Length: 293
Length: 293
Image (cartoon, rainbow over all chains, first blue to last red; front, top):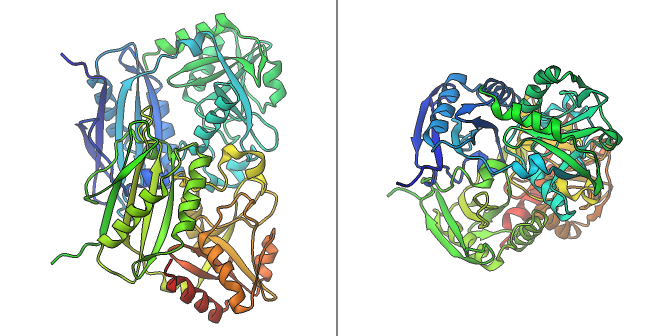
C-alpha cells in the first residue's frame, strides 16, 4: 500500500473575506492556486512553519499568535485560530506517522481585487536535520541593509512580519553557499546582530543565553521563546540584549534556532572556527524534540 | 457572444530546467500553481508588466532584457527571449481588442526541490489610468530603510531586481492610502530619492528631465528610458543624477512613470501642492500611448 507522504487542506472563507468557513482536504499534487493569486504575483501574504513531533504540533499557540500579528501588520483579515488549528491537526494527522514532520500554513490576500483571502495548510515529513544539530553549521554574516530600529520608524517595511516575500532570505542563503557556508546571520546597517533568514540567533556567554530584543526588526522566534522558558532548568539566565558581530565571535557557544531544524550549533563564522557546546546542543534538541505542545 | 477579457499561457521547460520548450494557452480561470510553488511560498521569482497599445507590446525588448537581468540576480535559468516573446504575443492577441492592455510575465523557481521553473504570461485590459494621467496623483515620501548604494555593497538584498517579493511595496501603498495619498516615493536611509513601489520618479527642472542613477538600488525603468530617448524631441535634456527630497518639492514638475499607467503627474507631496505641467504630461502620455514597439 502506498504511503501518504503529504497532505493539503484548503481553507474556505466567506465572500466578504472576514469569516473562515472551515477546511477541506484536497489532493496535494493537484494545482491549487490561480496565476492571479497575490501570493504568487506579489509575495503578498503570511506563513508559519510548525514542527510536529510524534504527532504533536509544537508551540502551536505561539505560532497562531504570531500568524495573527503578521496578519495585522499586513492588513489581512484576522485569522480564525480555531479554524486554522483544526486544519493543522487535520493535515498533521493525515500523513503516515513519522518522528518529525511539519505543517506550513499560508494566508494570502487572494486574487487581486477579489477581497477574499486564500489559505492552506500543508504537512509533510521534515528533512533530516541530524547533521546540522550534531556537527553544526558554518554561517556568514551578511548586511541586512536596514537599521535595527526600522520596525519602529518605518512599519511599512514589515520588519518582524513573517511574509511570503522571502526572495532576499533565499538570495542570502545562496550567497552563503557561494562562500562555502551553510547559513546566514544578518547584521543591521548600524552594526547589530539581527537573525538568520529562517532562524533566530542565540548566544551562550557566562551562563547566560542571549538573543537580540524582539523589537529589533526581527521575527519573534517560537523556538527561541521555548528555549528561553526552558533555560532556567539548566541554570541559564535568558537575556534579551542588543548584540554585536564581535559578541558572536566571542561567545562560549552559539546557535541558529528554528521550528523545523531546532537548535543548529554554529561551528564556524566567516570561515573562523568558534566553540560548540555539544552537550548543551543535545540537551536543547532533546527538549525541543520532546515538546508535546 | 461572450468576450475574451483575459488570456493565460503556461511556459513549459525541460526536466533540467534549462531549456524552454514553448507555451500553451490554458484557461485563465482554472488553478495553475501548486501550493508548493516557490512563487506562492517564498515570493521567489521575477516578473515584468508590459503595456500593449492597440495590440503592440511596448518596450518589449527592454522588458525582456530586464527580465534576463532579474533572472541572473536571482540565479534563475536565463529566460529564452524567443519563447517568452512568442508567449507574450500569443496572450496579447488572444483577448478582445482594446486600446490599452498589458501582459504580465512571471518566472519562478518552481516547486521546492524540483529544479524546474514555473512560468506564465497573462494578458488583460489595463485599468483606466486617465484620472492619474490628467488630474495627477498625491504622493507621500516614505523611508525605504536602505542606503542608496546597497546594490553595490550587498547584492543579496536584490535591489534593482524585479522580484515577486513585493509585500513591502504593497504595504507602502496602503500606508500612503492611510495618509490620504495615492502613491509613494521611496527615500533611501541616507536621504536620496529612489523610486515608487511600481514606478520611477522623473523631475523637470530648468529644461532638464532628471531621474536617479540606475545604480542607486532602483529598478531601471523601461518607461523612463523611453521618455529619456524622447526628451530631446521636446528640447529637454535627460539627466541621471542623485536627487534629494527637496529636489522633488522644488521641481518645475514631477511624475511617477511606469509601464501600464504611463506618466502620472505628481500634484501633491505629503499634502503640499506642487506644480503640474499639464501640457508636457499630455505630450508624454501621447508619446507613451502611441509606441508601436
